[in-house]
Picture 1 (cartoon, rainbow, N blue to C red):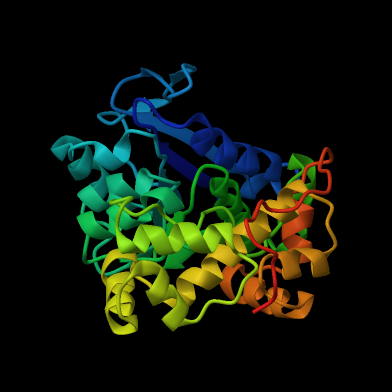
Picture 2: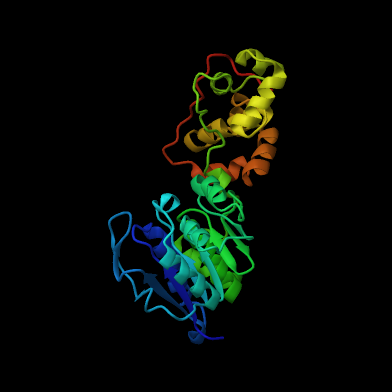
Length: 336
């Protein structure tokens, strides 16, 4: 097997970790693979010198004009401004040609928008940072955007979620090339998990504030969040909103993109996540306070919605300074 070249397309204003994360994985992997199968990372940009979004100066190995060969893997790194940036025809033409000459092509984080403008997401499944997934899907309707995946491969296309997920993607490529032991050894060197549990849902909130804070939907959402331990039927929610149950159900679907039941369950999960992150309350107390009723019911909902159990979630997100605290509520919580 020949050495593998990893091309990373670096836009001006790139998120530095989108470049450094995968590059460090491939660099560390070279200590665990045969000499003839090592990785070489090549940074490609429109200009030789550029700046990352954090102000760091970067120097590309090749400009677009110089990078005429293909790569074993070609990745477009992301940056905070890319979701709103207009397409660059020259960059898109270079990327489409380079992708055709490469073994695999893909993106890290919002680099997916660069791929999209080059037509490389069409008729493929892809992912990006959870905050930008809806915009990616709207801009490129022929792409099948999955907002929950940490990384995703569809034929020759490989895409990752936000920022550090580029490390997960790179580890998956090392695992594919050299096996589980090599990927695990690299993960240990970088002090990261070899294969992350769950998807992006554990990082993104389920709830979004309604556009009209005076709307019936906003009244329902505010009431539920302030009385999260209580039991909510559709009839009770409709009474809070001052509408009929049927109208409220339609309003939730139209304005929030979910049913009232899904909203209530998502609200319980979000409040429980905050408690698991910032308190030492026992699981049964969190479950009771958040309206799940039992710790087992809460576990089932977490696994279904987040892909991890409450114990796994707390282990990954709770800080050592956490102290017991309970949610503020204007009514005594009761399961339901």
